[in-house]
Length: 292
Image 1 (tube, rainbow, N blue to C red):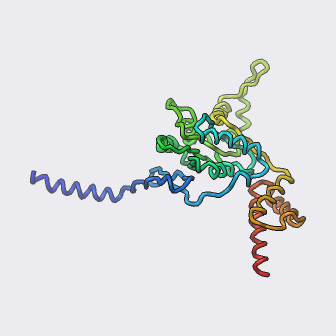
Image 2 (cartoon, rainbow, N blue to C red):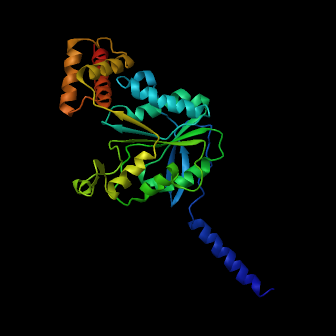
Image 3 (cartoon, rainbow, N blue to C red):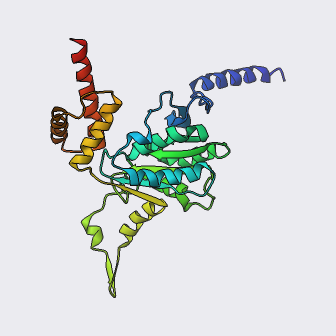
């Protein structure tokens, strides 16, 4: 036994050196610290990180999308109250409030146990691991994937299909997937794919490639579409955000003209553009007031 002592000592020293090279264990999740979380990766390990400063926005702040708000809130309320609910896909024009609805719903229902975990597209391959980590939690989780789209054969595409409903394991009862995208089918579509369509009698049957792309979006039980705003809707949103920033002269012709010029320069009359204009106008007004 005495002959083995030097060997054991060397082995222990070697293990100690190796342990220093290994990445530290992810910190435990503080579920009471926040209502929103991010899925992170570090040294090939995934972990959940609390968001300390959650975007404060309410449903009343979002104008011009009442029908969309009603549909998504109804599904979310069912989920929070423990009733059956669906995964949600929000698609359409950029800057129209798709992701803002999710943030606003979190602010409304966080006190009733709703939590949001945002996952970036390149980390979607970790979805099964993430769902397993929250499976036994009492909260109700929305796994949020913003601005989602895929190229062919991406691993995250298959992982998302499995979590939605493609696995032999039952989906977690305390977790739903909410995703936003500018594409209804989440993947690029090419003219050549339509050439594979077949005509059977009076019906047109799409080719296998198109069917594969459609199959992912079909796994979302609720589809909500968003459309570009017209001029009046855009100006209404501008007025809403100017009121939010407590700008007193929001209804003047000068403000309307400046807001329309701002949108023209950016080629879009979206809610995001209206928010950006209101921030700029409110900031300029504050500076001018302080210089008087």
